[in-house]
Image (cartoon, rainbow, N blue to C red; front, top):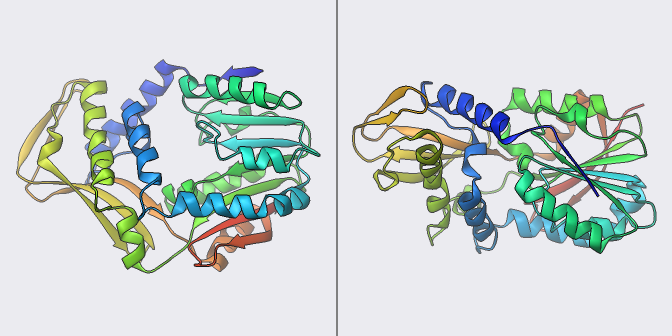
Length: 319
């Protein structure tokens, strides 16, 4: 097993510091979704994926289970690179299906603490596969991903929806640039569905998503010495029909000034002011195919669930 580190805790802290400063001083205010996923945030998100309202994770997993054989036949993958792999739990279905051709699995994640035990487990479970972990930010360190072999980059979980359109175009173009012609992108994306289904997925009745959202304020307190009172903010999930994305926001219940000594700023909130913490864009198949085409990919296969809520796409880097 191998783990290459291209993002140290100090570098990650500097990145988060810059993102937090930029977002808290913007108008309107926003935060990077990266700040949502400390240890507590990751635990809360795992709980979210098990909620009845939150369909994306289980729908994507079902698509992978049902179609892993076709994915393997389509891509003939020798090297599987997974961006934002986390624990790599759902990837096992792909590793099993790709066994006839797979030589190397490359999990990439921003957290070295999460990646190393995952690499150890997978090395033990798949002794015939070389497991090569990469610690880095997938938006900034694509060039560090191993080359060689017939590669498939897997970007699953609907995470592509967390990018604004210009960021998404830049990211997809960057992926195409590091792939050789004939190599593959395996992409999971949420589809546009009725807001009556979509909004509850991001604002569940049990309040787990609200707790997850407010946890970002605790992250700011812990990292930067801020004095946010999370109980003074309420979670909002808003469907933006024009942009076709969900926005998660935190709304101040009263006017306040928050001190953030670690960033050297004080932040004023008006009563009712909202701060965006995440976007989750949803897609139409033709629009997503057009974005992939513009980046240098050709969609070869699409697997969509029966309710048309989620898609897994195999897109080939054009020759």
